[in-house]
Every structure is written in structure tokens, then in C-alpha cells.
Amino acid sequence: MSNIIDVDLLEWETVRPDVAHGVYGKTLLNAGVKLVLTRVLPSGGFTAHRDGYGHLLYFIGGSGKIGIGGEEVSIKPGLVAKVESGEEHYYTCSADEELTLLAVNIPEK
Image (tube, rainbow, N blue to C red; front, side, top):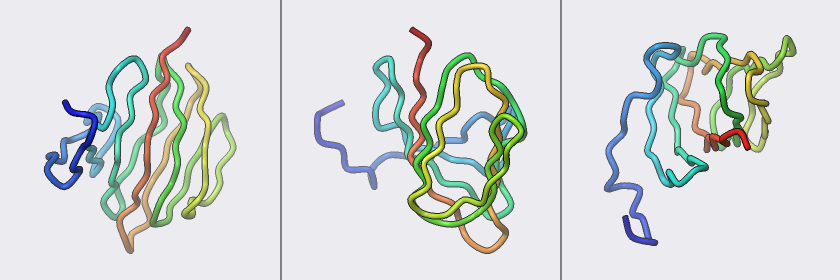
């Protein structure tokens, strides 16, 4: 992969069908830390689950709900959510428009 990426040329790939539905991603970086441009179709999202790595989620567009460790808030553009390794979390897209975010997967040290 070169240092300059034309994101339009990357294919949307299904993300985590074991815990998600209607979630697609384009991997922009996968070198220890993984960065994925993610789109969630209306009414799609992740069910509550735990991962062996952390996340930093930056929501770019759309709306929905995110839950982390028992707290739930509304998603709006500009919201950033930090999920610790092993922490239960989920997010869902509202029914009206797609949700877009950058998902950073951070391996344990």
C-alpha cells in the first residue's frame, strides 16, 4: 500500500458479522493500530460485546446511540468515544441516514 490512498478505490468490506449488522469498512491503516473508515446503514450497528483491544471512535456524520460500560449517549458529528480493552460497548445508527465514523482499534500494550 502506498503512502497516499484514494479511499474511493477501496472496496467496502463487511465488518464483524458475528456482532454487527449493516456495518461496512475501508481499512486505511493496519500496522499494530488499525484505522477503519466505517459506515453503518440505517438501523444497523453493533450489539453489546467486549474486545481484547481498545477503540477510539470519531463520529463524522449521522446519528444514533452509543453505549459504553452501562452509559448510553446520543451520537452526533464530532463525538469521540474511547472504549477500553474488555469494556462492554455497542453503537447503533438511527433509521434515517447512514452513520459515518473513523474507528481506531488499539492493541493492548
